[in-house]
Every structure is written in structure tokens, then in C-alpha cells.
Length: 222
Length: 201
Image 1 (cartoon, each protein chain N blue to C red):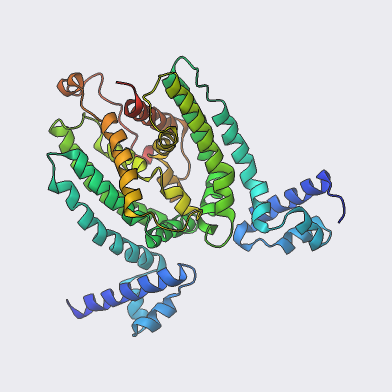
Image 2: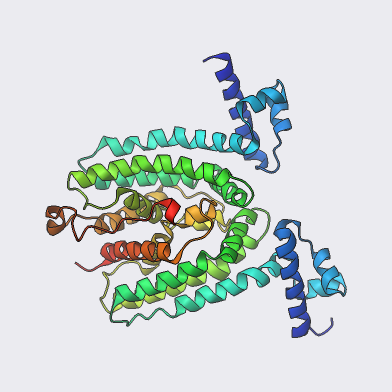
């Protein structure tokens, strides 16, 4: 690791700790500088704004986690149900963790004030595209019916979050769900998803044609 | 304690609406609102025990009533279930994605750690709507138009699917508003997936 890389790493670690302890508003670039050591100019040379630093911190945690989680999708392609259940449970354990609930809360809170929400969304979209790839492969091999894999990934994500996320975001419940609860929610979500996206004989034989699903509008047309 | 009057209550709500719109929830204070409406702070607190409650009254209540009315229209005996769900979804999302409703939702989430807005939002909007949809689906399942499943889980799946394509984008400010045709498409796709996930085989 070069000197600059280790500096960057030190900044990210300290900032992550401060953001988690004090939230976005309660953490200043000055405070981060004093924790890391060095000058404010150095800090800004790595991260031009507090928003960007915040997104980097939180997304670094997300990416570390997701690289582990995504392995579930490679491991057992022959059985998409098991793969999706394990994957879903793992995703839920992560996004329902207190830190990640707080990240999402902050991103939504910040959305009205800065471009942070967009940066965050781009990162989510990049990760989601890996789920889409898995679903596209399942569609290609006939394990799922053919449809827009990005749309299928949105639907899968929504089903996974459906039971648990909202009460956490609204702080109606504080305790993160345990493994048993996330596994149950994932099982139900994946069951509904697989029924909805199950291949039918007719659908499997029919290539894209007049009955092909209507594609979504790309984001700029929304 | 003086008798509360509806006209005073309305005057407070009116003043609070102005203040919230001008400076936002964070920076609005009960003192600002009291100044605008006149009278004592004790009177204000007698009507509304907290800024959160007042905000809710002002912004949330209108949206919540609208959403509950839309949900209440769900007819479990409708002959064409798909059409019923699409109609519901389109009306529901049109309100949910309105600028005011998004502002309230953002605020509920953002403030939930520091105030009881999040809990109020959940108890007064999320939970009742979920309950109505649950009852609707319970009846639809009973008349065997959908497979038998836990109607509460099915309701959460339906609502989450409806929001799946656009909510995150809107909440995170990636898009500013949603055109009706985008809502219509998203609703059709969500309802298709919901129905094939819950149809009888």
C-alpha cells in the first residue's frame, strides 16, 4: 500500500467511526482532520467534500460486504432457490444492521440538500447490476422466464425488504432482526419471486416477440 | 384550562403550515409558530403537545387521509382483480410520489431518531394502510381468487413491489418527480409479478 493509499485508508476508517458515532451533520471535516492527523488540505485532496467522503465510507463498507454476499450467487447456480435464499438472508442481515439503516436514513435526509443521494444511488445501481447478471444467467438457462433482468432485480430487492425495512427506517423498532427472522423473510420473498418468475413451458419456447414484456423507460425518460 | 376551539386550532395549523413551508421542519420552532398565530405558548401547547404532532397535523394528515381513502376503495369482490389492483396502484403511487408526500416521508425517516415523527408516521399511515390491504387480500384469498397465504405478508409484498422501481430514486433525489406514464408502467409490472406470485395453480 502506498503512502497515499494508507492515508486514504486512515481517513476512511476515522471518518467512518465518526460518522457512525455522530451522524453526518455532527461530523466536521475539521474533526476528521484532527483525528487522522495532517492538514485539512490533505484531507480535501483525497475527498473534495464531506458528502463524497461520507458516501465513500459507507459504500466501502457496503462493497466489502457485498463481495462476500455475491459469492452466494455463484456458488450453486444449479439451485437458484437455495442460492437466492442464502443471498437474500445475507443481504437482509446487512441492510438491517444499525449502521446501514443509519446510512440509508442519512442518504434520504441528505437527498433534498445535496447530490449525495444520487452518488449513493449510483453505487447501489452498480451492485444491483451484479444481481441482474445472475438473474440474466438464470433466464438464459431457462431456470427463470425471460424478462428484463434489471426489473427482476428491483422486484427481488423489494420483496426482500418488504417485511422488515420500513419499521427500522422509521425507528419503530430498534433491534436488528436476528438470523431466523431474516431467513424467514428471505424464504417468503424468494418463494413469491420464483413463482412470479417461474418459466412456463409456453414462455420458455417463446422468444422475444409480440408478447415480450414492455421495457421500462430509461431513467432519463421518467 | 380554556376550552379549545376549532377556529383557534385551524389558525394554529395555518400558521404552522406557513412556517414549515418557509424554514423547514428542522428550523421551525414552536416560538415562531406562536408569534405568527398570537397568544401564549401555553395555549399553543395545549392544542399541540409537540412540534412533531403539529407537523403531522399539517403535512402528514392530508396525505394519510388521501392514501387511506384510496386504499379503502379496494373492492375484494371486483370481478377483474388485476384491473382493481392496477387502478389502486396508480392512484396510490400518484399520491405517494407527490412532492408533499415525499417531503413528509423523507422527514419521517430523517427525524425518526430524534423525535417520534417516525413512529407517528408508522402508526398513522404505514400500519393502517397495510391493515386495509391485508383485509382486502384476506377476502380475495377467501373467495379463492388468490392462493391461500398469510395475507399480511402478501400485503407487504404487494406494497413493496408497487414501490420497487421508483421509490428509491425519488427518495434519494435521483429524479424529481414521476410522470403518470412511468407510474402506470411500474404499477402494471408490479401487479403482474404480484399476481403470478400469488395466483392459484
